[in-house]
Image (tube, rainbow, N blue to C red; front, side, top):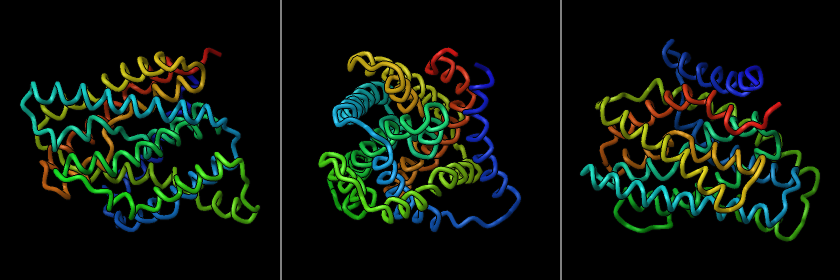
Length: 294
């Protein structure tokens, strides 16, 4: 079991360390370009190619998507209660509690832990997370409801096309499948390197608050993940994916929202860094819990 856990953690840790070390050594990293490349090309192609390659039942997809919506709702309710009790700014910190880093960190971990089936289920969570993150999440930060940003995001259209093919039972031509598979292959390693770059670039302004909010995100995620999986009767790989994705640290796009709308971005950046470090430290226990015994 220890070697199995190491085989999952090591590639993720090494890739993130490459990004971290790259910046610390003073090498240039065009974050804006890489972010656009992943968002506009890599991730949409990964979503489409994965669901076209892997057989996933429509009922399974619906169950995972529904459970994800329930989990996000529970995150919102619990986060709202605790943040209000602590008299913290909901517009700054609620998105960071509702939307875990199921992309940069969650996708590679689920792929390495559970294989292609795990990646498809993890992408289901990721797809729902993107749709709600760039609507409700952004609306919380901005103070206004708008679907404009979602409609400008190519991942949204990749989700629509993928769902159309999935529910219609269609398969794309080989040249489309091969092209999207090739382009989608760049997404996970680049996401991990970009995560390391983010950790090297962000600064922590309030240790105590960042630690408290990071612990809340991780503990709440784990408990809600277990509860949601039980609520939907999940077993095996699906249960493991739900718990892992819910247990991920604060998403980087929560900082981007806070920065864009001036909602205490330095504080949110601190939760991204500390929650990610704590998540890496807790990964062996998390994997020990969700992986089937060998």
